[in-house]
Image 1: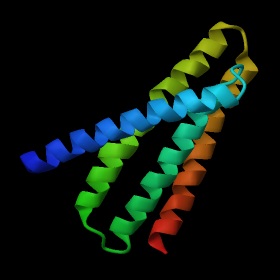
Image 2 (image 1 turned 45 degrees about the horizontal axis):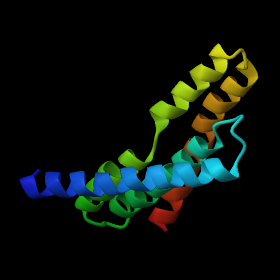
Image 3 (image 1 turned 60 degrees about the horizontal axis):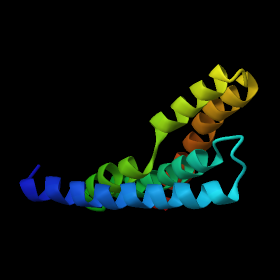
Length: 124
Protein backbone atom coordinates (compact mmCIF):
# COMPACT_ATOMS: atom_id res chain seq x y z
CA UNK A 1 0.00 0.00 0.00
CA UNK A 2 1.36 3.38 -0.97
CA UNK A 3 0.39 6.87 0.08
CA UNK A 4 -0.70 7.57 -3.51
CA UNK A 5 -3.06 4.58 -3.45
CA UNK A 6 -4.58 5.70 -0.15
CA UNK A 7 -5.15 9.20 -1.55
CA UNK A 8 -6.64 7.76 -4.74
CA UNK A 9 -9.00 5.50 -2.76
CA UNK A 10 -10.10 8.49 -0.67
CA UNK A 11 -10.72 10.60 -3.77
CA UNK A 12 -12.67 7.87 -5.53
CA UNK A 13 -14.53 7.24 -2.28
CA UNK A 14 -15.62 10.87 -2.29
CA UNK A 15 -16.97 10.40 -5.81
CA UNK A 16 -18.83 7.25 -4.69
CA UNK A 17 -20.36 9.08 -1.73
CA UNK A 18 -21.47 11.93 -3.97
CA UNK A 19 -22.94 9.50 -6.48
CA UNK A 20 -24.77 7.70 -3.68
CA UNK A 21 -26.29 10.93 -2.41
CA UNK A 22 -27.37 12.01 -5.90
CA UNK A 23 -28.85 8.59 -6.67
CA UNK A 24 -30.64 8.42 -3.32
CA UNK A 25 -32.18 11.86 -3.70
CA UNK A 26 -33.25 11.15 -7.28
CA UNK A 27 -34.79 7.77 -6.49
CA UNK A 28 -36.63 9.10 -3.45
CA UNK A 29 -38.51 11.46 -5.79
CA UNK A 30 -39.55 8.54 -7.99
CA UNK A 31 -40.33 5.61 -5.66
CA UNK A 32 -42.74 5.24 -2.78
CA UNK A 33 -41.43 6.51 0.56
CA UNK A 34 -43.26 3.71 2.39
CA UNK A 35 -40.42 1.25 1.68
CA UNK A 36 -36.65 1.88 1.40
CA UNK A 37 -36.53 1.29 -2.38
CA UNK A 38 -33.79 3.84 -3.00
CA UNK A 39 -31.44 2.18 -0.51
CA UNK A 40 -32.16 -1.25 -1.98
CA UNK A 41 -31.45 -0.04 -5.52
CA UNK A 42 -28.19 1.60 -4.49
CA UNK A 43 -26.98 -1.55 -2.74
CA UNK A 44 -27.91 -3.68 -5.76
CA UNK A 45 -25.92 -1.42 -8.09
CA UNK A 46 -22.89 -1.44 -5.78
CA UNK A 47 -23.00 -5.23 -5.35
CA UNK A 48 -23.13 -5.77 -9.10
CA UNK A 49 -20.23 -3.36 -9.65
CA UNK A 50 -18.12 -5.00 -6.98
CA UNK A 51 -18.87 -8.42 -8.46
CA UNK A 52 -17.79 -7.29 -11.92
CA UNK A 53 -14.54 -5.77 -10.68
CA UNK A 54 -13.75 -8.78 -8.49
CA UNK A 55 -14.31 -11.12 -11.44
CA UNK A 56 -12.05 -9.02 -13.61
CA UNK A 57 -9.26 -9.15 -11.03
CA UNK A 58 -9.58 -12.77 -9.90
CA UNK A 59 -10.23 -14.41 -13.25
CA UNK A 60 -9.10 -12.07 -16.00
CA UNK A 61 -5.97 -10.89 -14.26
CA UNK A 62 -6.85 -7.20 -14.08
CA UNK A 63 -4.56 -5.27 -11.73
CA UNK A 64 -5.46 -5.75 -8.06
CA UNK A 65 -5.33 -1.95 -7.68
CA UNK A 66 -8.51 -1.87 -9.77
CA UNK A 67 -10.30 -3.86 -7.07
CA UNK A 68 -8.96 -1.54 -4.40
CA UNK A 69 -9.82 1.65 -6.26
CA UNK A 70 -13.26 0.61 -7.49
CA UNK A 71 -14.21 -1.87 -4.76
CA UNK A 72 -12.89 -0.17 -1.66
CA UNK A 73 -12.97 3.36 -3.05
CA UNK A 74 -16.15 3.70 -5.07
CA UNK A 75 -18.40 0.73 -4.26
CA UNK A 76 -17.91 0.82 -0.50
CA UNK A 77 -18.71 4.51 -0.30
CA UNK A 78 -21.59 4.14 -2.77
CA UNK A 79 -23.26 1.23 -1.01
CA UNK A 80 -25.20 1.83 2.16
CA UNK A 81 -25.73 -1.52 3.85
CA UNK A 82 -25.76 0.05 7.31
CA UNK A 83 -28.52 2.40 6.18
CA UNK A 84 -30.48 -0.57 4.86
CA UNK A 85 -30.34 -2.27 8.25
CA UNK A 86 -31.21 0.95 10.08
CA UNK A 87 -34.22 1.43 7.81
CA UNK A 88 -35.32 -2.15 8.60
CA UNK A 89 -35.05 -1.41 12.33
CA UNK A 90 -37.06 1.79 11.88
CA UNK A 91 -39.76 -0.20 10.10
CA UNK A 92 -39.77 -2.65 13.02
CA UNK A 93 -40.12 0.17 15.51
CA UNK A 94 -43.09 1.45 13.50
CA UNK A 95 -44.70 -1.96 13.88
CA UNK A 96 -44.25 -2.75 10.20
CA UNK A 97 -42.53 -6.08 10.73
CA UNK A 98 -43.43 -7.50 7.30
CA UNK A 99 -41.82 -4.53 5.59
CA UNK A 100 -38.82 -4.76 7.93
CA UNK A 101 -38.27 -8.43 7.13
CA UNK A 102 -38.79 -7.78 3.43
CA UNK A 103 -36.26 -4.94 3.52
CA UNK A 104 -33.59 -6.90 5.40
CA UNK A 105 -34.08 -10.22 3.62
CA UNK A 106 -34.65 -8.53 0.28
CA UNK A 107 -31.43 -6.57 0.63
CA UNK A 108 -29.48 -9.73 1.45
CA UNK A 109 -31.02 -11.79 -1.35
CA UNK A 110 -30.92 -9.12 -4.05
CA UNK A 111 -27.40 -7.96 -3.33
CA UNK A 112 -26.07 -11.52 -3.10
CA UNK A 113 -27.68 -12.39 -6.42
CA UNK A 114 -26.45 -9.27 -8.19
CA UNK A 115 -22.94 -9.73 -6.78
CA UNK A 116 -22.94 -13.27 -8.20
CA UNK A 117 -24.20 -12.03 -11.58
CA UNK A 118 -21.57 -9.29 -11.53
CA UNK A 119 -18.87 -11.84 -10.72
CA UNK A 120 -20.01 -13.96 -13.66
CA UNK A 121 -19.98 -10.93 -15.97
CA UNK A 122 -16.56 -9.82 -14.75
CA UNK A 123 -15.19 -13.34 -15.14
CA UNK A 124 -16.48 -13.80 -18.70
